[in-house]
Amino acid sequence: MWYYKIAIKLPYSYDEGGKFARWLRYKSAKQFLVYCGKDVNFEKGAMITSTMEIGDRSGVGINAQMHGKVIIGNDVMMGPECIIYTSNHAFDRTDIPMCQQGRTEEKTVIIG
Image 1 (tube, rainbow, N blue to C red):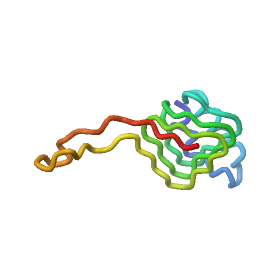
Image 2 (cartoon, rainbow, N blue to C red):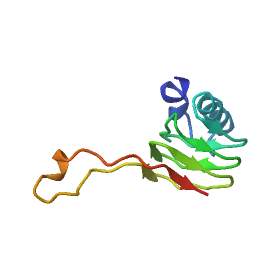
Image 3 (cartoon, helix red, strand yellow):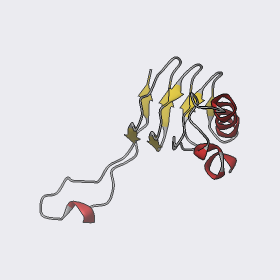
């Protein structure tokens, strides 16, 4: 997977050589995402999953992380180091430590 081996480590899109880095991250991500719109910017260090969908002209910020099924619409600007989780630790019972209760069911996060 070129995205995680090379593209994620390339310079920021605004640095010297940034246009090429932005293009390569986009082309690499587009190969494995469920859907990737036009003119999308994945910044340096952006961690994405194959279950992600992202619309036209949207951007994932520097070192942002997507975990699980995330759907991002058109014209969405995500800041640096934003983290989105689609599941959590289960915590229904107070007589069992949270770390022993497993995880909640994954729910899709949609950002319009």
